Image 1: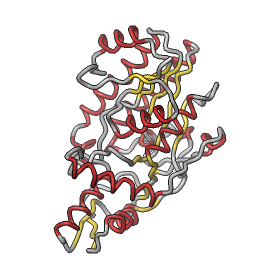
Image 2: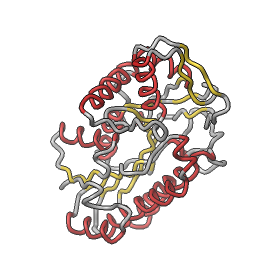
Image 3: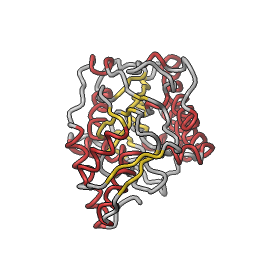
Image 4: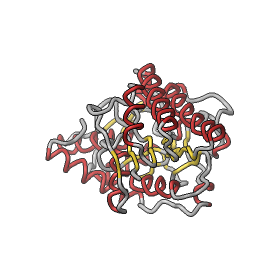
Length: 310
């Protein structure tokens, strides 16, 4: 009765694996070299052979605004393939439970704030990450329709922006928190007088630690009748400029922070309505400043050991 955690080497997958190991939950994992999740026949064969009790789809091609804008075909193709192969493969292998992980970017660019689950598909998406969002919406809808047609408890969780140990700190293709942690750290080391952040600094964002997400996922898997999809977040947000100042303080950078309005801002605001998941008994536990401090310590540790994803 094992839980197959896909993408276990990524930031989210590793948090899921930590949670499972801490609570004595037997798991299955595969590296990309062992199993290419975009290879349909390979995925079908693996699931038929292993027969896990649960599949958590945490594997995905992910990145920030720059990566999503530059490689939209890659994002939609790879993420559609991963979702379709694992969900259909699980059905064929008679896996009774699947949890698909999406993203808050599935909701419309001008969605009401905070965003409830039922605002999905009510207006256009944010263009800069449309390809990724469409792939995630497709995975969510596959779970919903497989549940309706086949009676299988296949359901989804839509986390807000995530951060935590094992993040990707690539200079161009990372998300905002790891990008700023690296930028402020390097500026501090170089005694740089200024750091410039993308955009106006006015968009508001919500951030959730991956260990909180992992707890939410296993909480949802313990529910007999979970929602088809549910938001997972903190219910609070801050501006990108406020975020930058908080990270600078965490890192110990004391120079000036500048904005670059010529760069895209993305969606003006992305705050999730977490009423539904709170009604099931879950709420986040890790304070943001504590989580940021731990993330920075992890970055420094992986940098020293040569394990940092740069």
